[in-house]
Length: 177
Image (cartoon, rainbow, N blue to C red; front, side, top):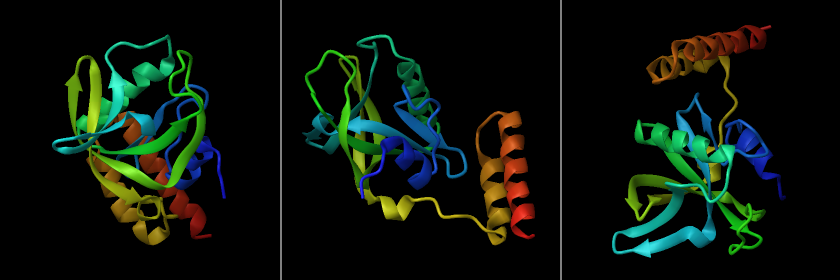
């Protein structure tokens, strides 16, 4: 069954896009994972394996997604797990915004080290991972302690951390009724 890519991020990966119109990726603070849209025509073989282009130093055109992409890459470099959702462009050669004609709903790319070559940032592809191995499971009351530890260990603002803790504890209260 084909699903919309925005719903795939939210419902399958558990990562909410900041803005469905211009976001190029999303983070899941509960699992400390970042998911980036990447293009199949920008995967290349190297002597070291495979890489995928994840960013450019300068935008081709004005887009709010550009700044968000660089923030996501910094988040991965700071310790979050990084994954690529491989998309196929309707027209890879367009000078306009690319349109997604298809994306891989079954397999993600696990990112390794980043390199910058000629103003373009590439992520080493460490592995291809089945989406079913990463899809967020519904949490239950029995996972509360581990969920709270995960939140506390994250390098995020204290107000965000507090909100996540309150939301997770609240889930347990409602589920026990």
